[in-house]
Length: 290
Image 1 (cartoon, rainbow, N blue to C red):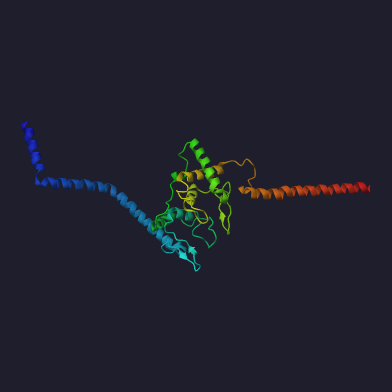
Image 2: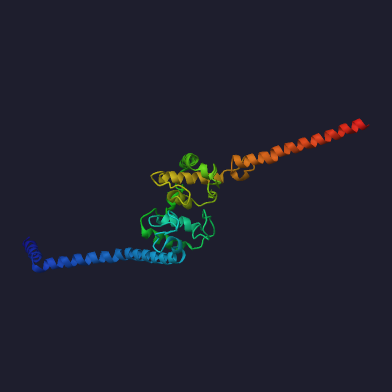
């Protein structure tokens, strides 16, 4: 018992000694330094990688996009007030760049009313770099994750409910331009609503989020992320649905169907009537002559 008391007393005297505080401080620095060494390099490496990506994107932007959008994405105005060669990109976000460049709409081959989808001019890494650079110019919508626009993780019942909700949203907001089944159609002043058949879900989500060209912007305040996902699910169900009615005639609705009826339907009836009338007249003449 006396031995324990003596040992405790010695430890107590050492803790109160002038070197005890220094030893504790050194131990704390050693532990914190070890933790920093373990976790900080990954974060620093990630920041360095993002910085390199932005630098690469700036080089691509200056070479391919600055002629229309300005060296700093400020846009270039024309002599005509209120018009620009290329709109400003500050605040458009990475999602707008990923949509325009990822679908080949940008860079445009020539000025026009609307940029059509064409072969992509950049690799995936270059598209990501351009998106990162434009995102660094100002805050804007980010590129969505697959979980934002896919219903793969839902049960069958939840999928059907999502498709049903998406159909109602699409018929209410989108059919005036994209037609009832997403086949697209003509727009005023030389524009057009492109077909949505075969378009990746990511690009449909980005188009809803950023409103490219003549399309209105459906921000998360207008359509929630889940509602955007439901619209994409509905469009996907249209591609999987069988065409039970036979010829789709392009899926343009009353226009194509009306043209078919007038040209082939009524035209065929008129031709049949003319044929019957001509043969009836010949038969009557033959009977009179005999």
